[in-house]
Amino acid sequence: MDDPIMVEVKDLHFSRGNTDIFRGVDLQIPLGKITAIMGPSGTGKTTLLKLIGGQLVPDRGQVLIDGQDVHQLSRRSLFKLRRRMGMLFQSGALFSDLDVFENVAFPLRVHTELPNAMVRDIVLMKLQAVGLRGARHLMPSELSGGMARRVALARAVALDPDLVLYDEPFVGQDPISMGVLVQLIKKVNQALGLTAVMVSHDIKETLSIADYVYIIADGKVMAHGTPQTLDVNDDAHVKQFVHGEPDGPVPFHYPAPDFFDDILAPAGQFS
Amino acid sequence: MMRHIHALGRATLDIVSSIGRAGLFLIQSIVCLPSREGFHLWVRQMHFVGVMSGAIVLVSGLFIGMVLALQGFTILVGFGADEALGQMVVLSLVRELAPVVAALLFAGRAGSALTAEIGLMKATEQLTSMEMIGVDPLRRIVAPRLWAGFVSLPILTVMFAVVGIWGGYLVGVDWLGVYEGSYWSNMQDSVDFVDDVLNGMIKSLVFGLVVTWIAVFQGYDLIPTSEGISRATTRTVVYASLAVLGLDFVLTALMFGDLG
Picture (tube, rainbow over the protein chains, first blue to last red):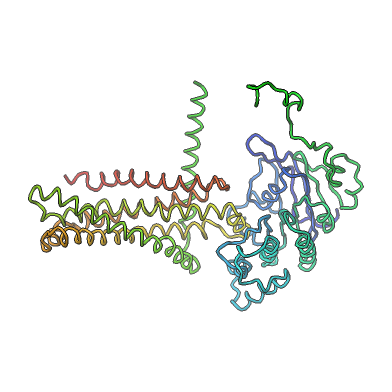
């Protein structure tokens, strides 16, 4: 990768209780590109996003955004840095006491001194981009899952951030919503020249829009490259994941005693 | 044996760290510069936390005043001292019952609602998304609620006491026939502004802060699942009630311990 680097993750270690989530992760997110972080469920992809956003603190290692070590910043400086970031949450995470318009206007109202008329124009432009200008008066509880995620996307880019973090943007979407979101993320990214980090395990959709992909498993980066190079990668882990094979290095069964012994266990020895 | 010592040590560490987190949480949320936006949020919370608790406080105050007069009368009349009913009603209310019962009702009505509201915001990632937008939820969500609780409980306590005194009047004077003049004049003679009214107000300020602090901290610190929210809501009511009753004893001992 020769592009300038926006986010750099160096030797990241993180554990929860006695479980190691990351054991030395190194990543480089290039400026102005969509970088996908993929991997099987439970590998800590969302945790990685939270570490990049400074919501969690690693046991060891660094996350540098534009050269600033996120975890060394004061609370105030961290919040200042976050103004340059947008994040699309898996659940949308819209504020339930505000309507669609006010949700999108929220970052503008708290971080800018723009007059109301200008806030209105910007919000309507963002809502128009996600196709929900007509839904501006609805409350979050009145939106479908796909609509909520589109509103959340409009809110994430309301301040025209430099970096957008997408947490599983395609999970639980019907095919139409999924197609709409894929196109939207791609278009928004191109139009605004954003740097995007997308965490996902929806292979087809993610590979169709990502410029670069990291695959994470067992607490480490297992493979990385462009979607084309990963598609022809021979590594058994990568093949299983990219081609969606049910069994392979990642076993189908959760570790358990022998099935035969388990079934024939005498009464009183059931566990 | 070692296991028990281990468990005791673990529980102690958990409690100490929880108290530490709660203390930092209080300082970070309460120390902030006033702003116009903050004022609007505070007004909205005053409505939710204070005004919406008004009805329950008024009704309870009325009944407690009425019961107090009825019970007081049956005792006092045996000594031929039913004239002192006003004094008994007002001192019981102003010194003890109004601050304590209003705080207990407040913990049940507003405290549990605050915990559930903040907990649900946490469970639906609203707090996290606010942080990612670069807005501190301690300032925007927690601080207005804390200040609203701190300000509204003393007001609710005054309303409780006033309605209670009126309830006592209805039962004592209108129903049981205590002489109206002695009901009011005994009351007026016996109440000292600093010893009674001000001390009662100090109690309710302390209770307002403690109950709201417990409620918002439990909401902010809970495990974001449905079970976590239900447990935290219960903890709010239990901890807040115990804290109110315990602190009431301490404050009463400090305020009235040397009067006798």
